[in-house]
Length: 602
Image (cartoon, rainbow, N blue to C red):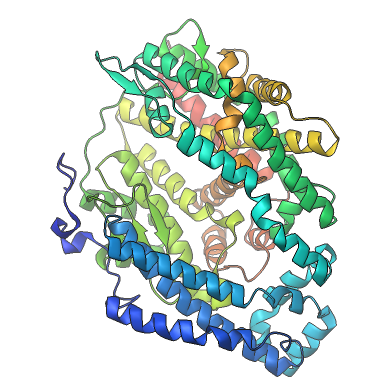
């Protein structure tokens, strides 16, 4: 295994442990040749401006040329970014990435007129053109999606004026990012081993996972006292972003900022509000979890700095990557032989960049260019968490496989609302298999707690974030000032509600809202909670062997963006317009909690 203390150079990593980028481009020379062709042909798209609605033939010709150039750009973009990610110290790759990004921007700018011109059409024109040119059926969903936003699209002059405000509107987010990521400096604390460690954004959660309670407390107070010192500036940044969002909401004639953001994916606001209502219904389960955490940590008072430290001691064995692949294949057997065959293909044909090397991007991700197989970046270290990461990222990859095999280019890219379902479903099915298989109490407790932490962090925590966003934006819409005092009170009240009576909700947690970058992309985080809910709904049906469950899941994986995301889920047996999927997921949380409680009964 490649997890020794000495991190190898990229050139020292075995070829079979790296991804094979040749399906994108044979080499850099092939990339350069295609780059030159792409750059020369962008003006072809610009020549369509003002003409695309003149006839069905012209519209089809434009859309097919657009797809051809966009797909070629995906190949260029994908190759350059992956080459850069595998070794960020390679200046040649960095330059290639910058050029690819610049060319992509040039292409999108060249077709910026597309939506306004399509908005000049009517649904009747779309129908007529599709009859005249049956090939336009491939683009029906794209065209109708654009037309659905017509009532919220302004005149050409007004749209131009709004576009000119974009750089200014990014001000609050830019200022916050610079302050939070570059300027903010946290104190040093005792590390529990006789040394000192400076708190950073990256070290904060690992410090809160420490078994040394004083380290946890010092890290918690050190970070939040620093934010507290700048609370007025931070509330001004946040308030400015909320005001900016309200301006665009009113300009585009939406009833609320929530409605404006959810409308992009045709999600009614009731999906958002009923998520919060359903989680509230299951808060007693969260309170039981908090009580169990207090009991297993053996503390008289459970504080907010005790939320991340492990409550289950388990010395996990080290798994080779070969073992990890076998565990994933065995665990995901309920998804059928065709699914396993795709997994094997990925494992055997270098879809995965497995181990850490010097300069390699941290973390993990899956990416896919239409017409090629997916790619997965890992930094595999042999832990059980790494095994789950492999299952998770291959879930994304196979979602792309099924979608690409069954949809055309324009209809293949699944919506962000759906993006985490397949990956999380894989994790749930794998952990269910491991729980059924193990007879070791410590391992079982570890797995149960791993699943509980997934729920706690994804459904409960992200829904609390979502509720905070909803309250803050409603206050601004109602003319209530978003001062540091009002924001901190709202946030602390929510923590008290979500954690319950056995948690000491320390005053410092009131400022936590100030360290959440996602709040500058409003009404986004709720999708983590709905995604896990849908994943559990699919996974539970498959594991129970419900009729057509697996077929419906494969239909979901194959749907891409050919229909609206809620319609696709509903057609596959998961109705996210109802409370049931979230309620079902939280019943699984409750059952998992009961199983862990039984292991530690007095």
